[in-house]
Image (cartoon, rainbow, N blue to C red; front, side, top):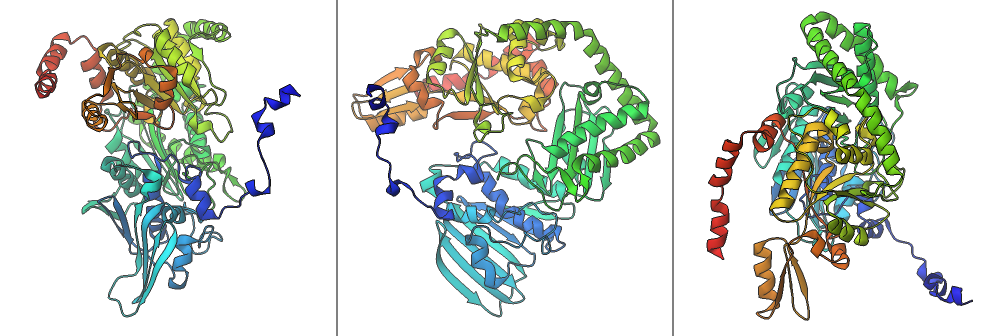
Length: 621
């Protein structure tokens, strides 16, 4: 009986009054993450702020796909987003319902819209419900209707006749600060989305804040714009009905894919990307009549694939991973992609013997390196397997990115240095989704070394085994790989060494958006009534002003100095992460050579020339 009394859940009141039924609007505002992804401050490109923009533009793209509306105008001004297309315009009688009533739309039977991405009747309604201001205006043959909403509740409804405007739809909104708090749009993220739309829809003009984006060559333009090195051979560009692919090879490790379904950027891949990877290896092996290992064919590949299907099924509402098994009734995604490459890639290689020769040379080089380290790999796997049974470096979590679980996308691993820092994080983490990997001092500078160092170096070997990325990035066990180091010179050095490790050997972790840097506070400013954690000198000054002259100021010199209770503030809902990203302007080899190579004199001059930044800070204080 005493045991029952200690169970709070058993003694808590629970009755009919505790059972509630929420309207779709109430549920979405209460649990927005289920529908639009992470509610953040705009610092990461896959946050809800950018998903909402995509949901609105997707509808305009669907008009273009249906053959109407070759121009879309987007504006971002004072945190107000507006999108105007020149398609058919939402039918006027249905305008209010189309933007405010969940599961209402014209994309269920496949007649008014075919091979589009917005099929669930959720997207624009989610935008409406999560906005403090929302306006929808439709124009059709001189008639117009404008409806406005606040937090999804209708405010006004206006009809007009004899308007001198082109047909189309206008959507304008400002997200609700009650849900999003303080935020800032990163225009670079928005511009990249607009560029992707142009690559996927040749002939469409998108205008963002007055600047036009258009593409003539589709995915070929995408690859040329985004490659960070010269390709080994001219990209192979193949276009068929409902499928387009571009393929080339670089010189680095890993595989780099840009995959799309009905215009949706599937950053987490899916069945189409898996089918593409399989078909590329199979077709090339059959062309050369050689039983090459698939990894030798695909290492260093840079490719893009886009398909269109009638009824796309995604594994989540943000639509980042494609899940359909069929491209059309009776035709699997695997056979659709495989048959296309088997014919057209094979034909291309026969017609371009120089490309075929260069490609085979690259495959043979990959094969030689793989065989040279195969013995080391086998021994390293055995070591990692034995150590993993009692791996003090890894404190694992229960739910992983590869699991079919609603929390899988929240899975993360913190890579940190030293027992004290890893101890603080371990004591304060969420054991369901947060793992900790502890480094022993500074890791090896791996620039200029071959991949065998990954297996010979115990620390690197155990890390890649923990991540499970040796054979295939699809096996990555954590959605976020977070480098967590002290906010000092040594911590920055470790951060750079670990970033170099991923750039050198596993760049796909970065390209796929999985590598992050944890920002930890530099200062704690508090008085008897309030506590502020400050991540910069500016925040420290502002906190002192709020707390008054008697404020207590603590400078955190390392992660180990932060108590476990305080750490919960920094790795929970208030966690600040900087995503490590690669752009077309970031040549990997040149970056690594300059910052991690043997050019000591050049690097020394760079440091000296930039010391004035620290001098300015000293003078200001």
